[in-house]
Image 1 (cartoon, rainbow, N blue to C red):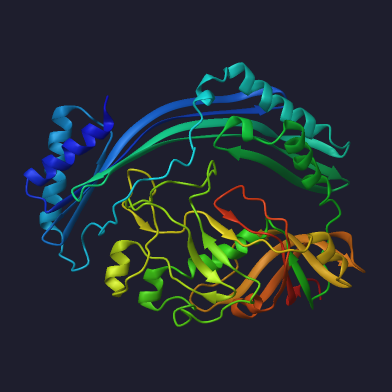
Image 2 (cartoon, rainbow, N blue to C red):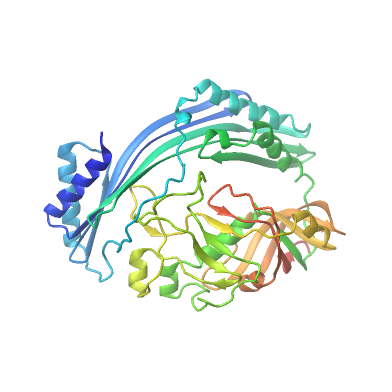
Length: 447
């Protein structure tokens, strides 16, 4: 089936039925998942899916619905009902499709056709092997939380009445394992995985397995520390949760409603000069890259924070119009069942120039955070409070594992007290950060 032609015909039909503007967002794909436990296959799931979301505007009124039935009769009725929905909605002056800058979407090399040819037997072998190696990493590892393998292929098409007709194909593949280590009454879990667009880019099975085992064993014997103020180093993988709090506070609709502590900080310093953050979904072969966003705008690299200065809030087209601002919009999409919404796509915190080991070696008494329980930041007030685990630093070295403590303070103070950024970024997901050091945070532990 020619899905792009199908989408174009639905847009034409919506206009013929009276819509002023129309957009179709169509997805077609398949997913495969398997899980292993103690060397045995627990589950194997494979599914194919397709669906389209239709957005129509009539007299500044919005109608949206979705379907997975692509038969002629069903699409005819589906289109008619979506147009009818727009007739009974309330008009809003900001409703309507974006004003697009025409261009050619980039080929970001997001699709690996060889993934569909991997035999299921090989997928099972990979999941079994990563679990087996993780279980034998250390004699204190007592249980498996399972090994897994998954892959997917997807085609995304967006067509609208303003002349946009884009599509791209993508793939994803990954595997990993989780284990439990025990010593006396102390039990700690750890896991690791690798996920890429192309099969050949995946990390080695042994590396993934050993990291899963290490992350469980190294936490054994964790204890709280006395409440104190101390320098804190956020590990590159733990730091992502901290940055989520900042990014959520940059939501344009929250700024419009004045429900974020960053409302009045545009073009003002909010962090130390060592912090530059971009949203860049144009990195070739990256798992979070896309050639166009949820509204059909061609993606670009946007600077969110430049040397500590907040440069933009995150809007989609409708929230930007509502707020009366002209900005580069960034829109996500939760699949064909969802309208677009303001969201970051692939955040990269700029790498520093100092090794994490050197940063730690310069701390006499401090905390190295490797795990956070939530984002910590209260968006309306900017208050920061978050459970954390990791390791205590003594005389420039990792001394012992730490758990059962809380980090507390003011988010803006924490941002401005970032003293050093490490050079260890690992661009592996949708939010990527190097490790970084805060000069001082209140560490709440035992009294």
